[in-house]
Image (cartoon, rainbow, N blue to C red; front, side, top):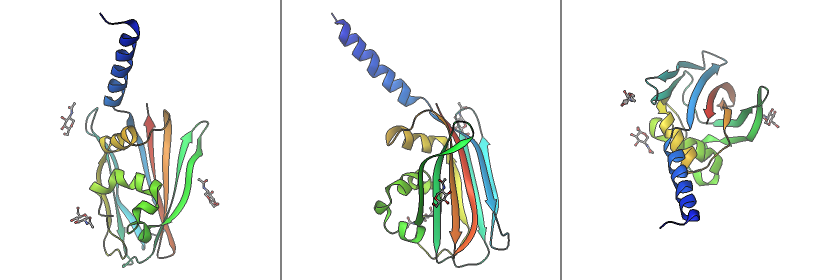
Length: 179
Ligand SMILES: *[C@@H]1O[C@H](CO)[C@@H](O)[C@H](O)[C@H]1NC(C)=O
Ligand SMILES: *[C@@H]1O[C@H](CO)[C@@H](O)[C@H](O)[C@H]1NC(C)=O
Ligand SMILES: *[C@@H]1O[C@H](CO)[C@@H](O)[C@H](O)[C@H]1NC(C)=O
């Protein structure tokens, strides 16, 4: 004895559940670039596809002039239209400050939360060790994108630039598709 509007409503709810349950993010590429190999060098920068549902990225930056007492990170989200164009954000944050006051930097926190469980970047300055992100998977990114904040479908690139001890060290670009 269901009325038509009730059925339509149930269908919409079901669609929403199905849509949330399907993977929405795919890593498509990862690029790491360091400018001075005596200062900072990527000893790992990999995108791995284990199977259709399990893909991850890992990166390791070896730092040769320790300690790092100052760190600034610039980040921007690009979207592909006709080539990658700046889409959202162009922020430079003081990373040493960020790790003590994460709530003061909501956008940086949003991105950092995706990888914080799998990285040793979880304390403030000084840094006396290599920086590692180990197996950040599409699942982790999916969780944040679908449950916390959503973006329209398309191809994106998250670009970050790192300035360590007042020296430009390099950058990382993560390419992903949302569908
Ligand atoms: C994909 O690989 C992961 C890790 O090896 C495994 O846990 C998962 O069951 C695999 N999924 C499929 C669909 O094979
Ligand atoms: C971000 O802002 C800086 C300074 O205004 C500018 O040089 C840079 O090109 C901008 N980057 C993006 C992605 O818009
Ligand atoms: C940072 O991560 C390491 C390794 O996972 C962990 O041992 C440590 O307790 C974490 N530190 C903080 C401040 O969360």
